[in-house]
Image (cartoon, rainbow, N blue to C red):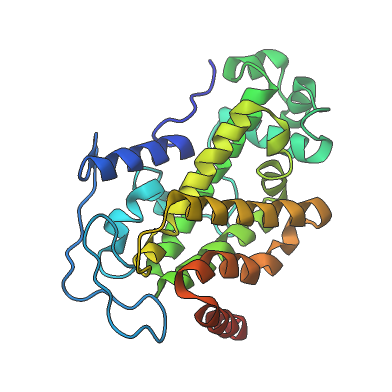
Length: 290
């Protein structure tokens, strides 16, 4: 049986449900989103903000009720973080299907997508070709679904840290720490989702677009700080720059060193919303806390 992609438990499916939930006023099938109350006043977005910020409409600033809408994006429709309690954070294998996916990720990271084969995956997973084809049709399907499954689990971990951070900039920083920690424990996934993903073809580019949409959800609290509404281009530009940073770093350095990128990723994500001075002040404070 071929693996199901872009379902409710997938990255692409979660983004689609979130988009529908926002556009229809808060209900997407069996997932119901509650619009947050704006009282009491919402906490400032960053230290030094002159006053509590109120925002009408769909998005509100990070703070009281923020997770009800902004964070509902990818998070509510995915497996909850509480269901994945393992520490350190790793890709969790529940069944043979995911065992094959994990093996595929290890092979693609070691050999590269273009040179790997189904036989290599079967050897890594210690299974027969027949067992492989009971779950997947070819190497493209297993690699893409493996990357998506890994990102789904990572998003669950990000949920937990994002919604408990004291401010939105802290949420961005903490989320990046979670991502780099996960990459350090799952270096093969880090390589597969960046360096190798672009070598697979059109379906991989579709998955990358879903990943960019998911990343943009974490930027939404920043839009409440802008005097005039920003276009989709801003989120797209930030997402592409962050992916470029990750891709460039991983082509020259091991995934275990990704944490060195956190300040630059934070700078890329925060500066368009809170300005360079506040961004640098924030980064200095967080680096001092490390």
